[in-house]
Length: 292
Image (cartoon, rainbow, N blue to C red; front, side, top):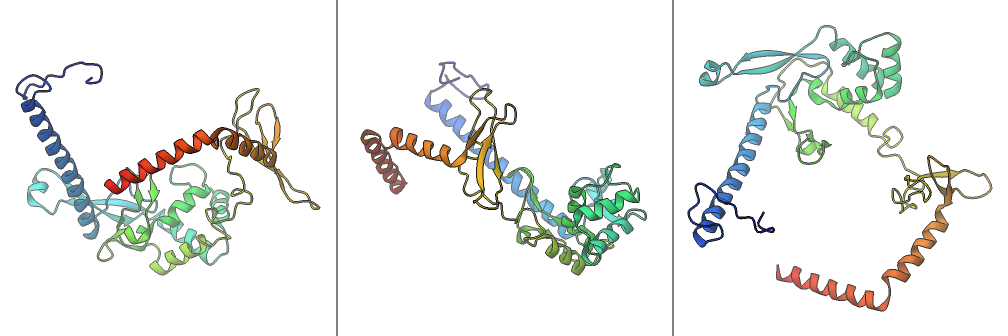
């Protein structure tokens, strides 16, 4: 609004917008508002950590294999308001399935998909009622609550797109808070098996990925679709990568495309006047960094 010269009047600010008193009042309120938000975030996090250390379930629904058992809030005032806390207790039908999943994976020699296939063959219902999938089995392996401890802060749900945190950042309860389904040693053994390079897809080497810097940047000229990288394996020559359109099947060799890109960059970006401008920009950036 300020950029298009629209004045903003606020009921609890004295004077015209932009006057010294009005600006001072607004800045003070903005600072107080920011302090309140940060203080609320810290208080909420401390509450979550203390709730977990005391052994109460922190989060949404109970994990597969458990169910919630509600108790009155420890605080008398909160209990009088109807607030409750939740512990976990094993589900008589689902808990043996969880124990079997860990046992077959660690001692039975079955992989994640093998365990899912075994449960589907026996018509064991999954957490969502449908067939078991590898992701559902992996979610059970990743959950340390089956060891009897309450654990929180395993993922950055609001700040990093639900990405997992390091195990050192997890918050564990001070002591086991509910009946365990698998021992802590068995759970760690399953983690060790899943995190090996030959079993964890996140650690497997991806041939050719480092050699394809144009990944997700190549589009088909005729139809405009993003082209995907494919390779042709030959026994007598090295692997050769191509970019292929999923619609019209147009193909282009990756090595030739990279050579064309290098020529274009040299022609467009490395001209003398461009290099001079780049040097000035870097010098200005360094001066700004030193000043800050």
